[in-house]
Length: 298
Length: 298
Image (cartoon, rainbow over all chains, first blue to last red; front, side, top):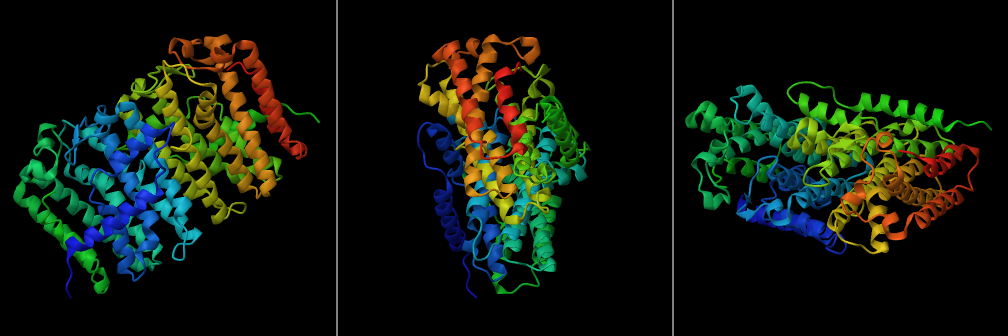
């Protein structure tokens, strides 16, 4: 079976971008700058990884992924808000993201805070206003809102960013490093596949398999991200390489060395694949996607 | 019929505080500081006006308000997050709120941003995780999430804060001032009563009446707030009087003068009352609550 991951990602990315365009409020006075600030970061060239994982899960279960576009877009809005707030001067103080000036550099700090707040809130509006259709009934949609809000909040992403911030400049235990990443990036990645599984009406067993796929995907993603920061090319990544070290962030390579870290990445990719064994060829995109993490260059 | 507003408010406030305590995650490592920061502002002595409006509406329609506690608490969490972010150095740069140091003064700027993000996200978790019961089915709950997220986001509260920020130091048109307040404080107040109406299964006509009550309540609330800033007692309010003028904020007294502004407050209170005419004695608390705005001292 011929499958081209690059073409698949591009197709899905276009689908997500078109839907985001449709859901977002138009740029109009008197809140023109707010909406422009929200759109600036949302359309700054993100890979749309989380929405694609969500749509790919629906597809793997034999359902039409387009029904899950509001869910996929809401997750991307939450991911984008988290980048805006993480980049703020009071947080990571980053001036460059995906090769472009960060939101607060362009729109100022106050507007960047508000744009983040606006995107986070809008995610729940998109879910509740556009989420229902032939595939997703009210009970499923509420469960999806529960999964996403749990993963994005203090028990998930916001909690992870807290651990990250407090750990800066300190050496942390391997178990806390793993927990930080499980919260900070893993939780929303896992919520992306879990939401897709719930939307598609997965059995409990299938849902658990996807959740495990998501957990290992999230760790493999973070580990390869850390590796890229050491070995990657600044221009290709759109941000300076070596920034973790400069900022005294705990990373997998710093704790385990390059060789062991590469092995860990392979381990989590293989565990992710193992959890997809029970599914047929329709899970091929999800398989290729996690394998690709070992080859990523940005 | 004997009715004591003070007793009523205290009773309802206790109910809300107890429920908030139950819904919030416990203070525990490794995100101890985050949860403490969220709790600090949530339990800093708020009047619980929005949750009480929500519960009062359910009561006015003859239903058990306790079923609406998750909704009422979610709204208070959103209100609290907005205060934390509005107080930030990049925004209003306030160091005192309700007589206590603001969140970022105690926990630092980064943690205050995260606590706000955490509370906003947690509001939707509380709605989706605790919201269903004998009174509120999935369809109603989704409609409530839609109402709240619409009122809290870029078309509501976040939009209003944007207008407010951009207007600082400028003279603005009366129509924009009114629109700013309708968004910044009015939208969430209106959403509080509208959510209650939807929870209680109000007819479209009754729901509209409550929405209009909420709109006039919101304006009367903001106008009396502006009046207090001019004429109030700093100690009683827990924040310095005269701060709007010092900060060159457009206010109703600045635009219309004290006399005209007092008349406007009375007008909106009477319009709010007019919209409750069709309801029986169970709407008494809502009537007394809006009348109280004309006598408020904090």
